[in-house]
Image (tube, rainbow, N blue to C red; front, side, top):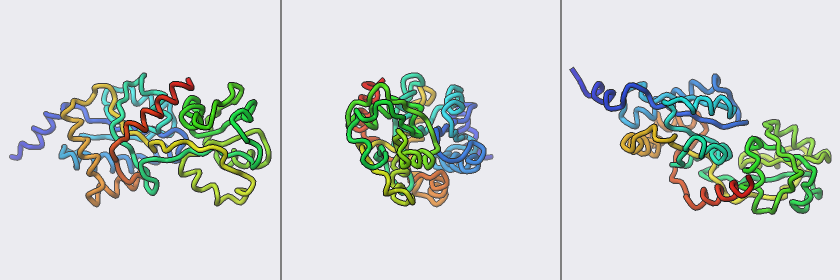
Amino acid sequence: MNFAPILAALALGADAVAFVAIAPGYPGTTAEAQASMDAFAAALGAQAGWPAGSVVAAYYEKDGPGLERLQKADAALAMVALPLFLQQADAFKLEARLVAAQKGAGPTEVWALVAKKGRLGSPAALAGWQVNSIAGYAPAFVRGTALGGWGPVPASTKVVQSNQVLSSLRKAAAGENIAVLLDGTQAAALSTLPFAAELEVVARSAPLPSGVLVTVGKRLSPDRWKVLDGALRKLGETPTGLAALEAIRLQGFLPLDPTTLAAARKAYAAAK
């Protein structure tokens, strides 16, 4: 009898490691993504050399349900959007470990503020305006991390969470007092809109991590994290792992630039 899988399972403990992906405002639902998340979990567990079922995974497109899942004791590993990380790092004791590099985009992205051409010449002109963004649930990210380098955003500017990007851009192009903060992927598609000529990018962020791979508190021992760290970094080196990454729109997990993250955190804290 082969006792290796049994011994490995005992070493892991009774509970599987839960990988929680939270990307508020992004496409897909928990149910729609489950098959891809199951494949990712299986590939990660296999890459780590752990028994089948040692890693489970789920995706949440809303911060509320995602954070509720993160409260459970088995949620030891998470992939979160940068605004959510900045907002919840202290509350959940999140430690940034790696960058989740988006497929076709790389480890960083630049956020862009878009408005009707000629209407926003400075941050002060945003007084009384509304800024719509998928990151609107974290106003300090919008005001500080994304736009702080442009200048102070007036207190009267309302920051709103919205994934209705096309509708928001149409309103901006029509002359409403609305600006739209786009992530890197959305900004890249701006020129394809039929009304793109009516819009302009008035401010850009510094390059920011496109997603953050974190550990949650001390739910993973150093030894278990070491194994998962190596597995995550090498996941794209096998056909199964690469397919699993592509299914969740990632190209891989890469080293985190601590200087870039520290600057993002400083700007966020200043805007709170």
